[in-house]
Length: 318
Image 1 (cartoon, rainbow, N blue to C red):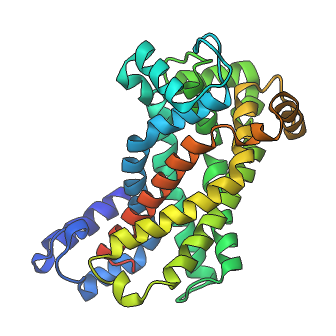
Image 2: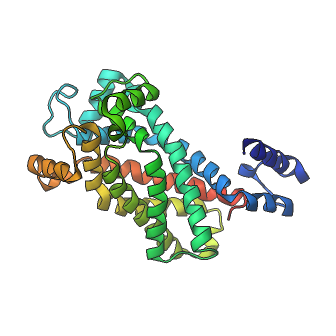
Image 3: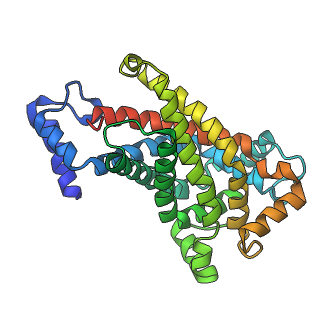
């Protein structure tokens, strides 16, 4: 497959003096269109992975702060009461310097880059098979986004577990590989997949709602603007609005997912995590860490979709 892609890219660069796909000034030739038609899922995966890389690196500190807000540790923070974003930022920088904010970057990249790629190629495949050549309805958008996210999130749940534990400060793993081996030897397959249900309960509705809000808001924009130089900021604005609405709705599932992945021996079921959060923090506990998560998730998703829209347009997928 890699050889084919290399050959395809070589053809795209050398034939008819066309520039590379990411910066093409001329439209694709008939031969190029045929190549792109033969490998649309691969192209969608590469475009998605490309977009996921930049957004993940840029907004990793917000994910770390979100995890620690949901699981404040007295050993890490001087006080676990009334913990705020700025407190965690200051504590992390004081203890681990500025690069401490990017703790957990390796598992984040390991999960998000292929995860975003899998999501976009799954979504592209589902759209081409079930709603070809048209904009999906709101219900279809929710279904397509949710199914695509279930496929990618389920495949990468072990890396999600490692990422959450890295960011929490509770566990001290040397590498992603050693973390996976340790979890498998001490907790078995159950430990590798702990928090799967709340992860899917969080991610599937989020992706479904996000895709629905995003596509519906784009319909409100005149097509001439989407084809103009304002396309990127329009996509980003639609992505921000869609992300805010989807994040608020799915925040409780994120809190429960974090608890189950950090303490698998304490929370044996989703119900036990729900009862614990409510008894300790009340209803507000289900929304702990909402601000950093909403900021990060919204900005990451908006940037990923904006880059994906531009890349797919330039390489001929749209």
